[in-house]
Image (cartoon, rainbow, N blue to C red; front, top):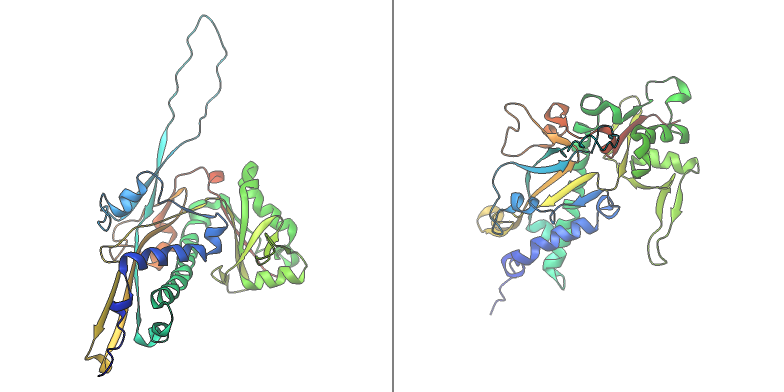
Length: 335
């Protein structure tokens, strides 16, 4: 009697698999762990817009509204027992994030080794989790390219790359000047993301401090008391111009919804002599707080935005005061 081979449908439990992938993707991202990206799923109204009233049912629309209160302003009044005080209103604004609908399919060639593992569902889930961790960070840098620039918010851009000689190079003073773009809120900047070339340059200049949060943990790099994340998603333009980003806690909003069919194993017995595959669909938002998604006519070309559309500055509009947008782009060269 011939044993029946294990099929993907035999080892994948969709209602367990997808939450596992989402959670592991978050755990493996330094942007999440550092607090730069905030999980908005528990914020009232966000979950309903992402998922609707019932799990698996979309809340409708292609955007998510993130309302906020504006700061209190105006001069104080002098107390006078002959005149009444004026009641002022607190005003609100609306930040708007774009829903992103993406999917990835892995076929039997990639999954065959995983199926031999002790817990194949976890092994496959880890593969997808690593993929989505990288994809979240890729998309974040596309959103940063579209939002933190001289067109949308010039006040949060420090560009020394066109200066002469050493004045264009990354150094401690220039980094402090970049932090100063947030004025009296610069102390809120807690993390910096750098290209690996910039990171190596910083190490050669002995600018990095390594801190071990515990004996069991790996050492975490810091620069000027800011955690350093190395990611080659940080732009490296022609002429040796690099963009380093500085972030405050909660600068980026993220939330996951649940597509109607998040995970779906399948098999095509006639294709290539027989092929198994696994589809993993993802619905989420990746959004810089304070800069709303405001595209013109014809955008997005498909139901939700592409990476190229996210990276286009014409599709974004600032709604926060510049100092309340906790991201700075620092453009420089390396000596």
